[in-house]
Length: 204
Ligand SMILES: N[C@@H](CCC(=O)N[C@@H](CS)C(=O)NCC(=O)O)C(=O)O
Image (cartoon, rainbow, N blue to C red; front, side, top):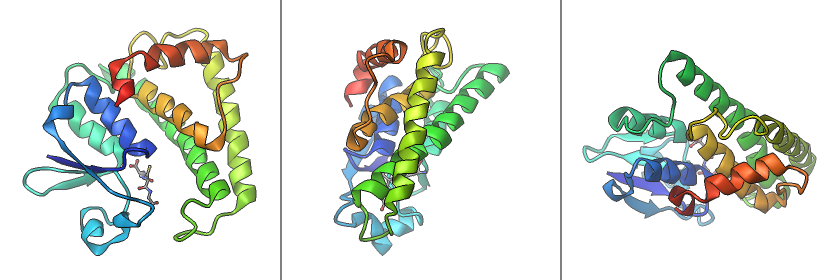
């Protein structure tokens, strides 16, 4: 199996961390795609993922799956132990709810803030600084929301570490590029962040 990815990009990191938690990193060959050079924009790459994004998982028979959570879903079904997307109907629904909240209201504005304020992809999009700043405010609000939630919870979905923690943790780390960091008064968020950072999977 191959994973096409970019070591510094946040979506591939979500997949690597998910795989590390399940002890699957050895199963894949990781192939680096240079986004700045546009290696993801070639017809050859588009044949793997017409959306031209990383990560992409390519199975040995050539089947390609893109979208971070679709790749994680594959690993969850193929290697159920230990579950990272919930166990049982209610738990799975709650985990999915958090994954979607984090993806839509935290990860997306984080990416928009980066892309629209840094001009990183200005060769392929039209950055709108005001939109980037609007997204920054949304991200900062979510830091507060998570801090309040984590006052009562060890992990995002309660007692068990899940992919929701992976997604929130990698989003917080990526926010360094936006110069958004955990604030001193966000003590619950900071304590949770340190708990997740101590896991070996946080190093990959
Ligand atoms: N919804 C996709 C998003 C993938 C994505 O946006 N990847 C970024 C890197 S984190 C990318 O490939 N950007 C390259 C570009 O936009 O040209 C997922 O969840 O995997």
